[in-house]
Image (cartoon, rainbow, N blue to C red; front, top):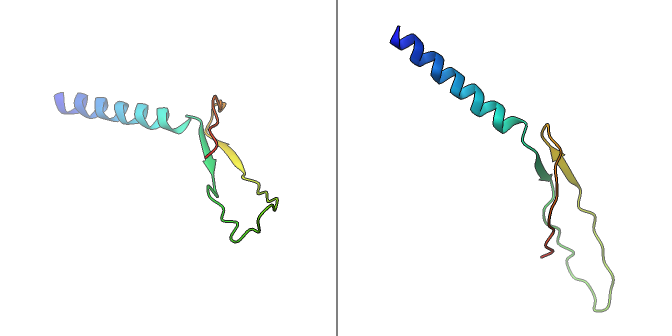
Length: 67
C-alpha cells in the first residue's frame, strides 16, 4: 500500500513539473548572431532578426538592451 501511494505521488509530481514547463512562454531566436564581414567606412547595413514566441501563454517583452 505504501509503495503504491509513493508511486502515485511521484507520478503526480512528474506530471506537474512537466505541465508547468511546457506552457511557459519563451523567446526563440533561430539566428542570434549575424556577421556582416567587411563593411566599408560610412556604409549603412541592416539585418532582420526573426523572433518567435513559443509556448502556450503570451510572451511579454519588458526590456530590450542592444549589444
